[in-house]
Length: 626
Image 1 (cartoon, rainbow, N blue to C red):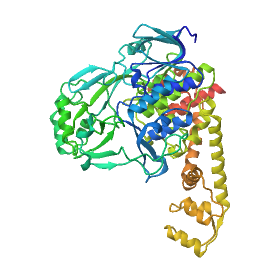
Image 2: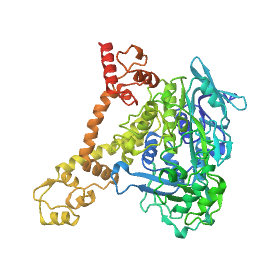
Image 3: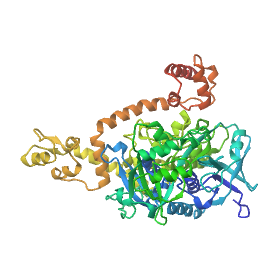
Image 4: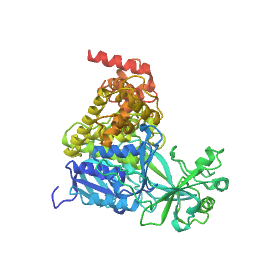
């Protein structure tokens, strides 16, 4: 870029939320000049809903972002005020970290990381139009009429496309509370041929700390164990200065909600909201209407940060009028004198049909135009950040002329997320769940670096020393598992005494330590008493324990992956004419034309395509090869 011209860049990122941040940093760290245009540079990486990162499946995504060279995990570690490992009593496939972040500090930290990177310019601007020439994006035009030229553009607009806020029957345009919407970019997308839909989401009210009676709520402290999201940070124990609190709604709360339903923009006789809301993060009205038999619902009262007195009411998302919100909140135990600092609201916004994207998140309609985050029909900071990272990496790889990075469903939750989006599309805001991953025992919180560091290193986002550290860890785990198979323990009074003491049966014949570790009651720590040369590295121990105890399940999943990859590797030519494929159903033909799957495996996952359609497609492709 010429010093006298600040309008020509390699990559232009539209939006500076969680997707935009990862996209910009990835492209910049891969050597490209990046412009980030945002409605408000003071709310970079803002957490407009819950001030938290992680949770089931989502926490694993944050670890995957870290293993690929992204930023979310590191900044979460820097700014978290309360952190816990969820599902510790369950199997390793569903364990995940969740942290309360200081949302103001998180935003400032992310802004600083963008501003101080030499390859990034962060600037205010509302993008109104895309510049496209011969089917390829050339840049954007902002609300000041300034045109910025770029070789690739990444759209990460979140809830800002024609955003509209609802509080009862009060309706006003906004990207989120207090910020302008992007009102013209949608029309530019429609004119280019994109299918656009409408979704809605919402956020609870915030209340003043001194107006809350915490003494009658259940306290939830940060973990007593040292924890960290990032593989690059030492786990730490946080001070117990910022607990979360648990209370519940009650019949009076539900009565208030029913009393004001007529004024709901969603349930009232005057229906104002058109968009479809998230199934897995419903408003309190949805809960009361759909679960009539429940007398109460959980409400988590969570701090927004160290330098604010505002608390977030997780579980009380609503779009009811302000008057109703006051009565509803004050009916909840511990919130009888609550002072609302910001009302709850619903927000409606545009999204594009993600089936118009390749698995790289590049558009099928306009070359070098990428989309990431809520604009693709997802919900959640973590889902957005994961998409942003992949979009940024692939935009940079394309400009380099290198092969793209496409994560498989068997390799990462991010792979599951993107494959679901581009293959199945969305009919409601998409949220990642552990149940969406067929191979979730392989996609664990503890092994994200073992799964994905090689890709981060290949694209240049992971340093060599860390890549070699991960390779060394792999070797140590394999070596220790082989060693345990060779260490034989014979029955003796001492051995059986140790075994019985931990609740497992005594030995009647000699067995290896490997066989003993398979027993559910036995931990590696116990085996040390029977082992002449135990290892002390806790990370190696963790991997060895999981791999030995779940060996049968893991092996079965690898066999399933092998079958899965057979169909994933069966490529479909990009220029195939589905009208020439004999015996396809009309529905299958239409959906294959729309999705344009890259493999038979992806085609098999398109809803509405049945096995006979797949068989006919395989026969046709085999015939073409011959």
